[in-house]
Image (cartoon, rainbow, N blue to C red; front, side, top):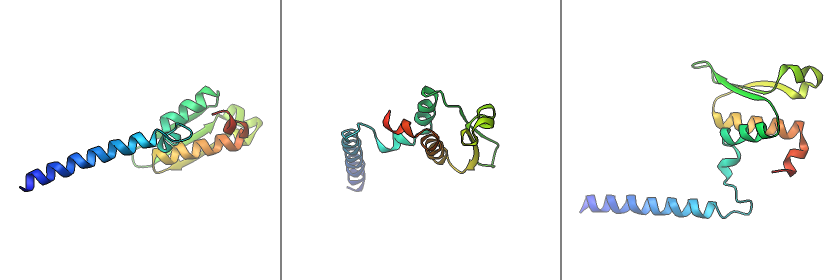
Length: 110
């Protein structure tokens, strides 16, 4: 009897997960919240707007995140900033915040 109960709970969990995903796709902006801070999405968004950025790591030193580039940063320090974060989600949030601070008009474009 116990194996049937476990299988039933797994199926129920899967169905609820799928339902939650479906309902998440029906939001007003048609954008799932986690997509907003997915590193791939944020970097593609920056690339589409011709904004330079990079993310790199060195073993256990966390993630080095760079917004902008040194050449443009010489003209405007807001266009070249660096930080170190513990996760790729933090990197995505940090990059998006820097972009919106440096280019406020981007908030109305996407």
